[in-house]
Length: 166
Ligand code: FES
Image (cartoon, rainbow, N blue to C red; front, side):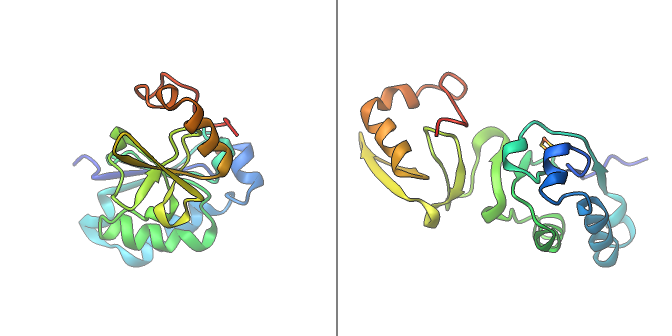
């Protein structure tokens, strides 16, 4: 058996994600994939429905490896785009991107250094220049927290408080 090129985990069994409408996501993704991808290319993509992947507050979540891409707030209408853009063309759907392993985010996707939220730069609610670099924030509260103690939020990943700061 050849190794899979991509493995997709769909949180369609976790309580929080299903409460947000993910119960049908696994079947929808499989259906879209089976309709659009055939032969060896289809066999190279594994799809697994899973219990909670640990990011309930942002669900429904869909995770794609080996890229380590975490999509959040995925609605049924987003499934075909994930299949066509990511699984078929290898292009990350940045508007749904919550996190990517290694922090190698596309240029237009930014992370709020206070709460950790990832969003498209066009959706930033505030920005702040600090030591020659522009930082973006999801709301004024995060901007205020950052302005008061930027060093606290510029520590290496994991050394400061993350999600839930607002
Ligand atoms: S229930 Fe889906 S991430 Fe927790």
